[in-house]
Structures are given as structure tokens and as C-alpha cells.
Length: 236
Image (cartoon, rainbow, N blue to C red):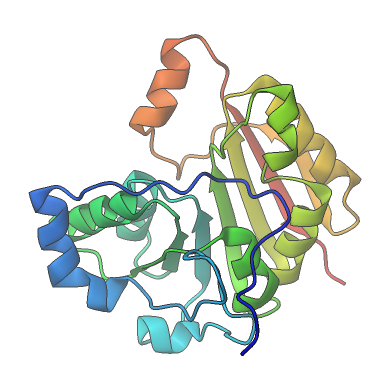
């Protein structure tokens, strides 16, 4: 038997569990079989077997442009986007199980059917799970800033991650990001403007399709500036 693989590289998240509330458990019991996609693992509980490739048509029961949101949290943004754009399919990648359960609560309340969720490490998902050029739009709202300098190596948006984003985005596909940490915004802008795979990268107006979440409200409440960045996948 081969030894169980474990990650040696830094990851951009801290896995958090926690007990589900009664509403969350009810939504999980009712909806998870349909809306939370099972993932074959290859080691840790958020890993993805590298031989597994998602079939969006099978997952959603139709063929539609796919929008992937990394770090979907409690689901405020992804569910609102799904309600506003029923012509699109939305896939949320999240490692916080109670957040996925809370998203199901909101899915049930709003009544959307074009959302699917996966408990996975996003970097692994973009490396092998999502087929090349299969994503219409990639969204990263308020990634963990790892604000202490010694932790910057854990940040999600790096030149290496930009290569993964370029791999999964279709030509002309859009990568949208937002952060409320100024030095991270500078890092994001540098990563994108230095990438040979993307156009754009400058700070822009607030993306109208991003609802203000409680998390963003907290940043605004302490005087932080919200930076929105948009990049477009170049045609090879």
C-alpha cells in the first residue's frame, strides 16, 4: 500500500470545523446530496484525487457557462449571484464546513438551483480537478490576507496561482478579485500585471455583481479601502 500523501507546501487557508446549528444541519440533511459534490480524496480531508476531473454538465444537469468562486464562505455572494444570473452555473470552493452548511440554508431560502459546492483546497482543484479552459469566470473575494509578514507565503494570489487561474479560464474569461488589505492589493496587482497570461490588473470600480457581505462591512467599518481588481485571460 502506498503511503498517504501529505502536503509539504504552505496552504492559503486554515481548516476550521465546528458544530452545525439546527438550521444548518437541517439544510445539510435536505440539500447536501444534490448541492455538495462528493470529491475523491488523496490524503487530507480537503484534498482532491489528481485523477478526478469535474464534469460540470453532470454536476448541474445542463450545459452553461461556469463561474467558480474560491472561498465562498457563508454563501452570501455566490447565492445572490446565482439568483441574479440563472443563465450561469456557480461552483463554490470552500474548506469551512459550517460555511458550506450556511450556504445551503441560503440556497433553500432563496430557492436557487444553479449552485454547487465542494469542500476542497482551491489550488488542488485548479491544478487537476477543473479541466483546462472550462471556467467562464473566476472570483476570489477577500482571500485571507495573512497580514503578518512571516505569513505572506501563505497568501493565495501568487505568480504560481496565476498560472493555475490561467489554466482553467477560457480565453477571454475574467478573473475578479477584491481585498480590503492595501499591501495585498498591491501584491495582487503586481501578480496580474506581471503575468504573461492576463490583461488588466489595475484597480477598478466596485464590481456591481458583488453584494456587500458582513465581512466587507467590517473592513469598511474600520476604515479600510476596498480594492477591486479584474484580469482577462489572454488568447493563447
